[in-house]
Length: 255
Ligand code: NI
Image 1: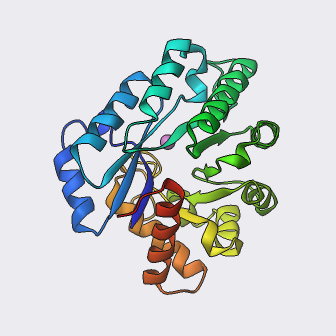
Image 2: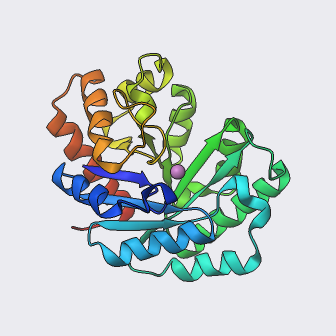
Image 3: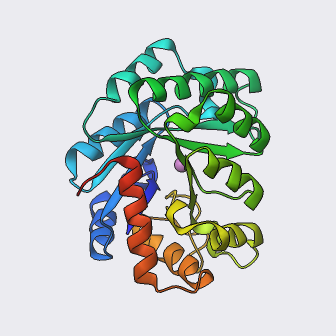
């Protein structure tokens, strides 16, 4: 199984990271992409990717903290893009739930990172909260199609998912797709083509059913895989293989 979005660089894993990683290996996790989104978490993601064979890194700047990103930070991200285990830029995007960063600053920082991704030729990982139309508009106007990427922890409509897939994006599902009341994610996870589907944990957040409310970790991605396999009425094994192949292809990972 390929966990395409994990924050093992979060303080919630400081105390028992070794055990969390061992459990992931024991449960058959073959690859993890650890996502950095500010200075400390970018450093953490790189360190983990340098330490563990099966861990890769994504580096970017979170929209909530857009006001904190300096030109030096953007330059640093550009330098890190040539690190052999950096496989994507992000997470990046728009988040209108929190008001730390004004919308226009978020949009600017989002656009700058898309332009950088096109320059360094890496796919992008998109965070969207309450900002769907603006996210889609910016992806379109910046020509994000050229690099493609992932709509991370997708919770939108099938209609918007189709627009994103047309722009070369994969749709990734995490814990919420396992929740009983998650009508929309379940519908999208069932209907989209298998070759656009990815799984993730977004750990330590968003634990899947039946562990909802607990700290999430990569080994729990199996609950996400099981839920989607059931929705699509297909063998778990096939779902796991296909989503792993999709992720390896997107990230350019050969092993
Ligand atoms: Ni995340």
